[in-house]
Picture (cartoon, rainbow, N blue to C red):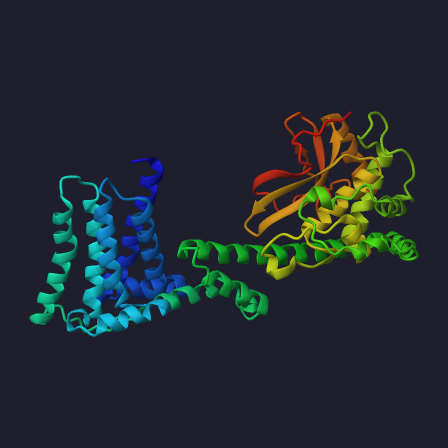
Length: 451
């Protein structure tokens, strides 16, 4: 058995363990199930846990198991038929009605127990090649059915507990993973319904999809809160920002970008440094800090270049209107830099990083876009190449001078060549979100050296 098969089989046995509280509840032992419901909420209900447990078991039966495929197949068939009489599944109502016609299968609690036991028995017997198919058929099919028939004939195992588990309720419990204030949003409702009805996804994958949605919502809220805080912090630059905005408003920037009808699919397409209006826009912002971008090596910012970078970052985030991607962040939507200028500086972190990179490149800098992950979800930001450690220390002094803050915090990124990059996130020099998963998103080439 391969490592992959062992892993899948382990998940299957975990599924049986997840079903244990529901099996105990059938015998009147309700404390474990009540404990899970009280501590896990909707995800700890019998319906939700049964859905997750049965999904993991099905995964193990199909992709895991041992040497004898016939054993797992027989266990799955008889187990599925018996469990379907006791678990409500909207698209399997017809089978339950047929099985209910026979007195043998009218004890739903017993059907569930024997069904789960049959699947487990088939999975265990699959690790032995000693049994013929006829023997397996007798053990996995005839034996369970005979047990049910005898039990019904002699009225054995007549459980008093009413057994109510529905897969549909298990699916709907996914909505409880989203913050209440977002649960009634039409976009969120539509997305959850799409996930719930996706027959390709198992329950675990559906849960991961909804959790990913909540992470993106957290990211949205975090970015909006950070942006508002930064705008308050930079009130001291209000006059400069107001003057820049006045000068920019007098010119109809990038009007042609408003005619764009196709969706941009990558950062490479979005960073439109070659658009004249992007350069004109950047130049207008930095015109109060004239001079060569570089002092020594082309592409590496000198004192004038650092001032220009600070002016760009200050203006962009101070005027930014944070708006999430369409369809509640289901997919990333990249806006071209010229289009972002045309609509008046609005979008999410991806769009902010794209415009920052385009503006930096248009005034002579070398930019890249990085991505990272944290508890609040994914995040993207722009960085500008500063050079060696000595270059960075000089830049640090210039940045603190620009912001009139001798203790201003700055955290550089150092690449595999030992070169230092200045972070142009919502707050210059600081990461908003970079706990793990750091990767370069733009440009496509991993290394970007000074020429």
